[in-house]
Image (cartoon, rainbow, N blue to C red):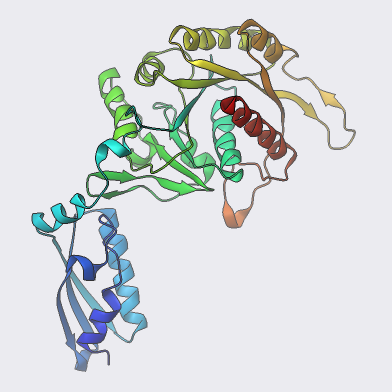
Length: 352
């Protein structure tokens, strides 16, 4: 049967899910008892915050660890670490100002992805551009700022949620991209019924309360149109680059021009236009069908005095059941290559 000292040795390397320090470092192993006749181990563990999903995950980890070592049954009690211990580890974190992307010292480039209307594939462009930049060795973050229509976690196949370390939120990393979305903070796909000021505060928290680390680029998937949330973001980010997504249809391009005009009025620099759903190419004949018309993206770019960064045809990603990300195109997929070219153009424009 496992001994008390062996239990301590097994648990001391496990990390507090909030402080990201080992239980040995936090003195979080408060009590260990072993009943040899029943092969039962009971432990009491102190962590930064109890009553959370992270506690349940830690509980599962502890139980599995001890059962693999020979325990038949495991009992766990949790307590919260004393405030002085929490302050000790919070004090060892970098100063908040250095982590605040809105601070004057931040070297991160903001790239907003906008559209005049919904349904043009703005979020698809956002997630694939973010992944393409990461594939090229860039440090990339992505904020799903489409508060009412958040979709980035599902599109990228994100199944876990952010954790809290001290007073900071740790973003979820997927496919080399650090992700934060309103979807992480809403239960069971519930509708968001917050009003403008509350949403503005939430968005500000995404910049100031999240532990992004060193980022080259932070992409923002904006809500469609020119409403309050988009305006808030334009106000929060005085130095932001912007990409407008449209379809080739003249009406979509006309509506997208409003988003472009808003960017220019708020002194955001337009990097260019991405035309999505440009055409459908038959796998059988190779013939191109221009389902939504032609020329909208080029005309919009000319009207906004910027360039057409790329044209994306209608095509389904190849789903990989082992690494499920339903809206992400593989690097060697035809559309993945186009996104790679768009990412390279963006980097070149930003380095000019």
